[in-house]
Length: 188
Image (tube, rainbow, N blue to C red):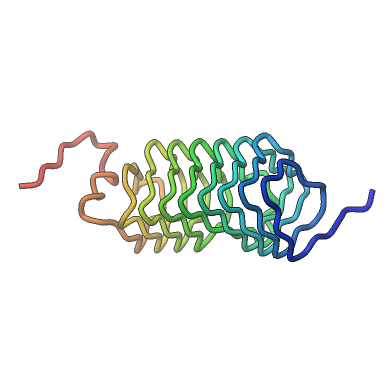
């Protein structure tokens, strides 16, 4: 079966995509919840106000893809094609998603909810977590070298089992690095 190749197209309010490659396409107000994106390639695309919750990402390619104002609950990005994997998230809900074991250096998460998201074994070197909620997010053997958490909140990161060299944290967020010790930190 021959796959389609679509370029420079805007899709609005659709809920199904044919298998193939989408390059420089915009997806607006689309409901792709529970969609099967297996094997689909997205290159230089943007998703705006879309619902991708519980979409199947087996072998999906995301190369330089922007997600803005999207609902993306329970996604398993570790099933994506790793080649040139790169994306940016702005004002999205990525709760209960997983980036397990991915090399996603310099990824930008801006004003995004990442509650109960799994970053175990991931390489997030130089990632930016700008104004993100990381309640119950999992960081285990995660590379966070030069990552920026200065405006993030509710994270719990164990410095003994994660690589955090030169990572940036705010003074108010330092408690998130000490939470495993069950100590009380007061401002005087």
